Image (tube, rainbow, N blue to C red):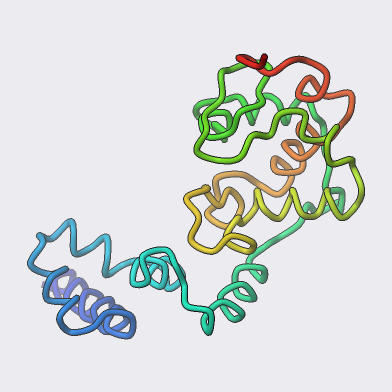
Length: 190
């Protein structure tokens, strides 16, 4: 009985929070779509709810606060280094169970890449390794929404998929001029 009451209280709280983001009509549609469907929408994080409501195109007046909130989520490696070990980064980048970056980005010397995201072929050779490029690359991998609101790119650090240190390894893989990513041809390149 106690668990049932707690569940009902939590469900009511989730519904109350969701009402801040959804209109009454939208809530009715969500609730009539089935329990699992409703839970997905009602239990969204506030940033995801904004993207859902606005169909991934936030109005200009919401962008400054949204970007500020997304940037505030970014955490950095304990040692302060934004480039780790490129060999470890290659293992993460090219691992289907870990980051799986190659599925969306072309440029991997190990796997044929996708074309959902931009090509990263020879990323470090084209962009260099300046502190600004390291920071930008790290931050986009950590939380892509800090630069590209509502993009489909997974927010590896913000959602807990990778640690800050693992992201630093991926940054090194992309930027280090000695990295296989920059010294070997991408699978499928011409």
